[in-house]
Amino acid sequence: MRQGHDRTRWLRVIIIILLMALLLVLVPSGAIYSYAEIVPLPIDEKGGIPPYEWGYQGDHAYKDESISVNIEHGRFEDTNWTAVHIKIAHPSQLRTLKAGRYGSTQELPGAVMARRVKAVLAIGGDFFAFHNYGYIVRQAQFYRKSLTGQQDVLIIDDKGDFHLLLRPDKATVEAFEQENKEHIINAFTFGPALFMDGKPVEDMTKAKTDAVLAQRIAFCQTGPLSYLVVYCEGPNDENSKGMGIDQFIRLIQTFPGVISAYNLDGGSSATIVFKDEKINGPRAQRSRAIGDIIYFASAYQEDFKVE
Image 1 (spheres, rainbow, N blue to C red):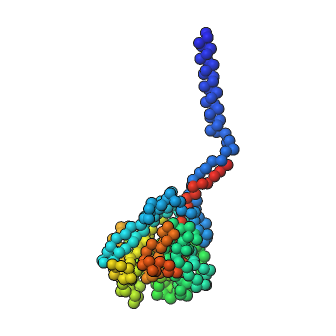
Image 2 (cartoon, rainbow, N blue to C red; image 1 turned 120 degrees about the vertical axis):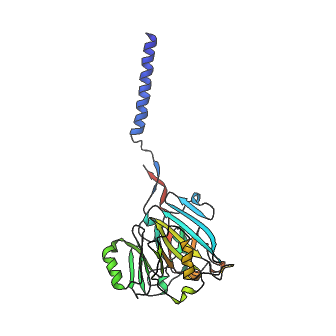
Image 3 (tube, rainbow, N blue to C red; image 1 turned 180 degrees about the vertical axis):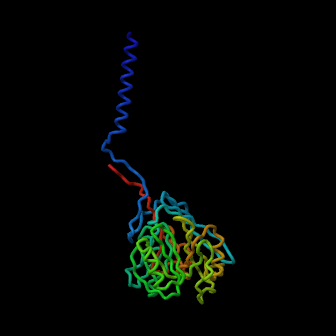
């Protein structure tokens, strides 16, 4: 009888312990819990979440839960090149920044602007402050619609997808706006457009500078929220000849999966910033001031706390 009584008592103790453990799980305790999550960024010019030191993988890569950046180098047709592969979790991580208020001619080094907005990676834009034409939208703010019908336009929508308009006039852009204006986040006027629908553009805008051997930079889309930056050195770089547009297209063709590609401001304005430093071009040109940047920011909030 004694042994049976002891077994019953211990069984009750075990049941009580299990019930208490269940209550600790189900009933809020008032403690502070830490979470990590991807937070969509506001469509403004305030920048992103600062990159994490642990996310850097030397001088060639960065990765957190919201973004990955991988840099590679190579050589093609007697010229050195740099390529950057970028993958983001949310379209708001693809962003832009002007050097100054719209209408000013202010310029700043790309690295200065990249630090200001805590960019993981930044590249130069279309330097729209240098001219007064084109279709210019920055962070959903519509600034300019002065089309000459001679420049190709790149539009990026709220899904992070590229739309290329070949030499559009005002009527063409207005027709695009009628269907898509509420989805337009950024628009650039430089060019030419290099790839559309996975193929080199045949009806390409021709310019006298196309054959000039120079530093060139292209912004490409390779898939949903996936991008590629391709840069070639110029004749001012040691051991490089530079590239004309036709050569540059051949270089881009060596990268698989390019859907769309758009030529941005090149020469000494061509800019790639990583770890808050311009990493491309002759060192003498690395403080070159430009009018705007395109950048990628982290959206990973590591210390999101809830009581």
